[in-house]
Image (tube, rainbow, N blue to C red; front, side, top):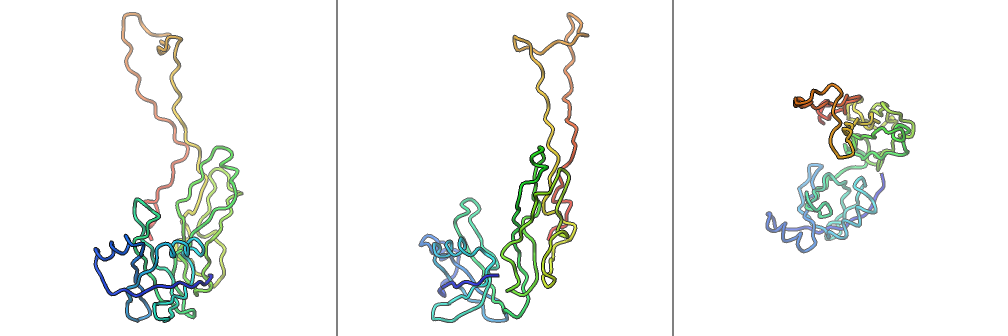
Length: 234
């Protein structure tokens, strides 16, 4: 896991109105806690923090400089974003760590390659986009790459298929599906029409009788998409 420096300032005011006022001024309210020390209420420049995230991502060991030069070793625990305008940062939580003690953190999964099954009409699905790891901070990867270039229709990659260092523990259930290539969905065929746009009458139709409306035909389901409800939530 890479390391980077980030400067923040302490704040003394609290409450939702104060937090909204900070955000209007381009400031992100945040807190710092952990390691049986006092919780600090802090703030940081929104533009600077966005640039920091673009450069380093969220999985980074931060040497945080708090106001008067006090240095803290921390990681990002959570970033809250506006539910509509995702680029708007609402709040951030940082947690103190020790480089000599294991931490638990989520790491994003990145898919690499194009599955042959997709070229044959299959659908690439990704039910699990991140995994939870437990290890020393410097061992924590920024992300995990999964090669999908060998997946045919019906194939899947599970958590148990991930190959990480022995001293990195994966906390997700081994049988959870990370990604899979599903069967293509079947579509109903459009009814044939004559030149005047009317449906073609069946050969067995009786003149003077109105044909009974046909019941809609359900397409045969070749493969049913696996639901997250079938898996245990974390």
